[in-house]
Length: 107
Image 1 (cartoon, helix red, strand yellow):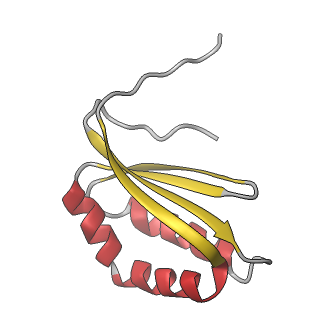
Image 2: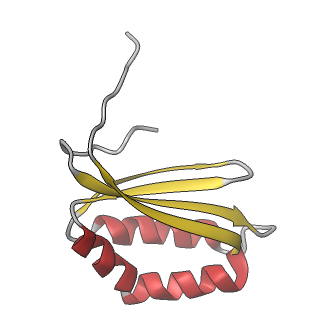
């Protein structure tokens, strides 16, 4: 696993935090398809995701317009409907502007 290759700030982050329902029920396949589709969208910068009991996916974007276009993508809208109907117990979306970032890497 690697970090998303983001540019120098500013840029935007969409933070999707979720609690899933039991079982996969096609979720894994759809999640991979959405990552692939998002990567083809203008303004997409990268994605990072982690899941235990609480799932957190952060996607990075060049602009608010790029985020809006992704939210309105017809395949993404279908996945959102399917998620509300069967995959998610609950979720929260937060959109933020990244003003500063820094990193550390051992050795």
